[in-house]
Image (cartoon, rainbow, N blue to C red; front, side, top):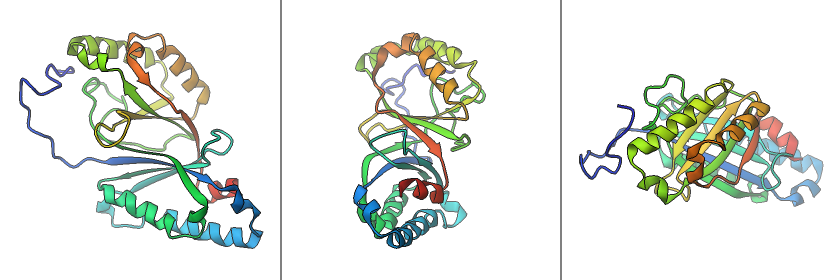
Length: 247
């Protein structure tokens, strides 16, 4: 069945799922303007050091399953300059990624205004819908743009019957149907971060994403949104391109 008639597990007493899952980290960074006042040669040397640190994180055995996608937010978000989207099977790998940056000289000029952690999990609403983007196999960073935001439902949402929620999500999915140029990656943060979900929309078409979000405002499920900000528009670039945007 698509709908879980006992999502709380109080009736069926379902066993905990301890299968290996991917963790996701959306790490946003802001550069101190003081860096831009350094001599150009010093900037170049420090940027090269940071590039090695960031790119070197994925130089690990394939079973580690480390994935990284890099984005610039220069000009699209005043509070951050770039974002690293990391995926790993072990939370400690995210610590190692940040430690690499901390050990660089340029790391002393970087702050993290936002940092989100979430976990991959199959959606209870779309298990039988092909290409929904909610499955267990992520295809991150396929488009030139990534639209990211933390998401929280109202407590009233969880008080609805499973069939009521499924009906609203069916409407939500149906309204999204025509927008084939948008791929949605939803991940779950219950208990491991402040938000409940992180949603990341991968696309080549910002205009299509704007129209999609506008259409979803008219669905019944949107009445149960407590928070869906801040929203980030991220432009995919390699690390060299990101550093060139910074200074």
